Image (tube, rainbow, N blue to C red; front, side, top):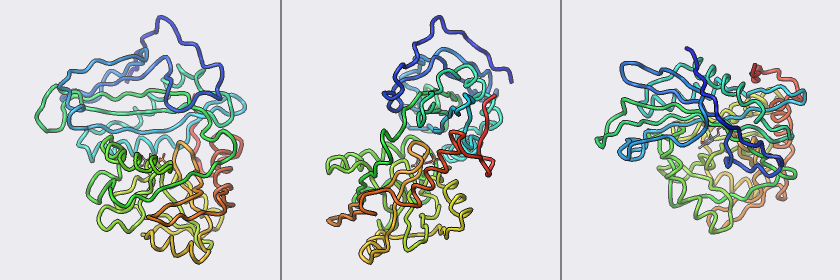
Length: 355
Ligand SMILES: *Cc1c(COP(=O)(O)O)cnc(C)c1O
């Protein structure tokens, strides 16, 4: 499929100080937009200047939340090449989300082509600083001007790009996490396993409560018994208990993170024992009391590895590993970021160069 190009009249100034990029605040010159219309399918992708889009106030996405998204990054290697980390996995998951939200599936190869073309146009926006990257946000939403509740017949697939700073300014600072015991994020049979806006809307109240108590993120428990550990707001969670790496098994309410999957593969390649199973918050607290809880860390595209320094469950505050990053967490972080920024060889075939 031909990808059209509409040239911008002027280009923005690239950020001079990459240490001040932050996350998701500035956007590049161009975006990719591709409509879907019933009868026609996905058609006429165009790369055009980044700017406002026009929607009817009755657009169904605004009322009923039929939206899905993805998140990944483009990395610049020391030699100046640009590369992606397992992007096919993101587009595969986008279709998983589409199926759950009754959005028409999209050709994953076409998505890759669209992304590749957009990145070729915008390659100068990929930051040069170690740790900084170009965040990529593909998303789909319905635009039908209609107030009845049904799947849309018209959609937009858009990719926007946002240069983002290093997640950690200096070293890996452990985060403090609050275990949410009142609200739940997702239930089995619901939408927890896909990236759709509603999940994040549902999680804001927990995040808000955590912030009020000076915790930065929420650890969600299962939606039925509030007993089993699920995940953090936008990260999967891992525990190292007595030498064993444990992470909650995927069972329909947890997002199948690509970082999670990669971390499991990596740990197994090192001969570590990795178990995907149900794990209760009581078990974690007990392991802590017995001195067996060695490391806790979150995994996700944004931070790669986020060591947990404190875990608060009711009145109990657990300090993990003396509020310092653990040995396994550090090794995973170094290896993953080494592969992503091209400093280390990629024995897994995870890297896709942008050409
Ligand atoms: C995106 C996301 C993750 C992490 O997924 P990655 O593919 O590793 O970036 C974990 N949990 C939730 C809820 C997410 O939205």
